[in-house]
Amino acid sequence: MSSTTSHQPSRSRRPFGARLADAMEDHGPLCVGIDPHPSLLEAWGLTDSAAGLRDFALRTIDAVGGRVAAVKPQSAFFERHGSAGIAVLEETLAALRDVGTLSVLDVKRGDIGSTMAGYAQAYLSDGAPLAADSITVSPYLGYGSLAPALDLAEAGGRGVFVLALTSNPEGTTVQHAVSGERAVAAEVVEGVTASNAAARGEGGLGSIGLVVGATVGEAVSRLGIDLLRANGPLLAPGVGAQGAGATELESVFGPARRHVLASTSRGVLKAGPSIDELRKAASAFAYEAATALR
Image 1 (cartoon, helix red, strand yellow):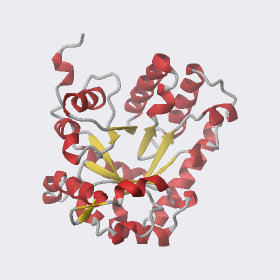
Image 2 (cartoon, rainbow, N blue to C red; image 1 turned 135 degrees about the horizontal axis):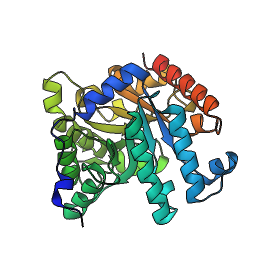
Image 3 (tube, rainbow, N blue to C red; image 1 turned 135 degrees about the vertical axis):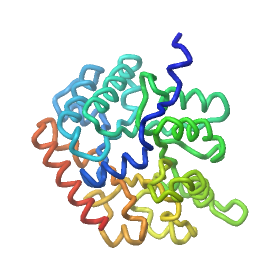
Image 4 (cartoon, rainbow, N blue to C red; image 1 turned 180 degrees about the vertical axis):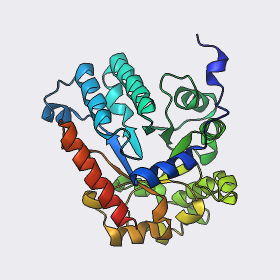
């Protein structure tokens, strides 16, 4: 069993929000997902196995590492291969660290108490095999239940993206539901706003972000949500060729557009397995996202 020192936060790492802001300035506001669907593995001529998964993930990093703001491995597609898949995920995260590209591990964890603390230690602790620069979390056991992850991320210069307004139709039944005087999604955004208060006071981008689909239409304004005041990065699936252009982005994000990190997976990955073609696709998407978000 590892010693407790492996869970001690870094004292020297810059805050995730500051690192992400710099990466978006240097490379454009694009996050490329590593979503190794069986159909994509087949399209790349790879077997639906841990070996195929490894080739897919590392080839993607060879193509886009150091060229985009962030890369987002989808944990589920690694987990489905059992312990061998988890080992590939560990290698994938290590490869992203080696090339200096920020990782957003898409795990959408949400729990309470010591269980949430365990998830936080698994993904946000220095020395943890699955340590990522940031993770996605689900707040639907109450925003306060995320405290172990939020606290550990802040202490270690890492980040958390909290689900707020997602584009799946089923999400509205929970996210748009009214609790007291505000919608559930608005309560989540208020929680993130409070978490980022110190960074806002210092004039920097906070490290606690939100997941807001670029195709949610007028939901942000209709629910009375102020994304700019939240002062966190906005992980946004559905930008550009994926569905939302400049007009739609103005409706959804308004003046908070400069905080948007556009996310795409298939839009880039379908160009594989050629590294050159993957790079061309990522470059095109980065340009499209930057243009749409101006």
